[in-house]
Image 1 (cartoon, rainbow, N blue to C red):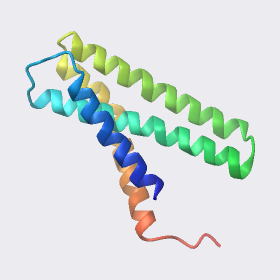
Image 2 (image 1 turned 90 degrees about the vertical axis):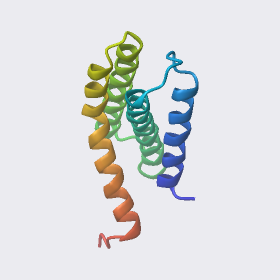
Image 3 (image 1 turned 120 degrees about the vertical axis):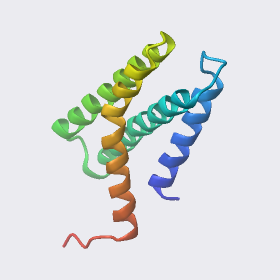
Length: 124
C-alpha cells in the first residue's frame, strides 16, 4: 500500500473524528472547512513522522534533517491546536485563516507527491 494512500486515509479518519467529537452540535459550512483543514494538518504531521522513521531506517541519524522535520511537525501541531481552540471560542474566521496558512502548502505538497507517484523520476 502506498504511503500517500495511508496518509489520505489518516486525513479522512481525522476529519470524521473532528466532526464527530467537535464541540458544536450545530454544524455549518465553516465547521466542515475547519475540520478539513485541521485533518490535512494532522495528516501532514503524520507524514513528517513517517518521513523521519524512513530516514532513520534507510539513512541513519541525520540530525539537521530530523530537527527540521520535528520543528515543522511542532508548528503544524501548534497551529492546528490553536485553530481548533479558536473555533471552540467562536472565532471561526480566524481559525480558518490559521489552519489555511499551514494546510494549503501541505495540500500542494501532497498533490506534487501524488504527481511524482504517478510519474516517477529517474534520479540517476
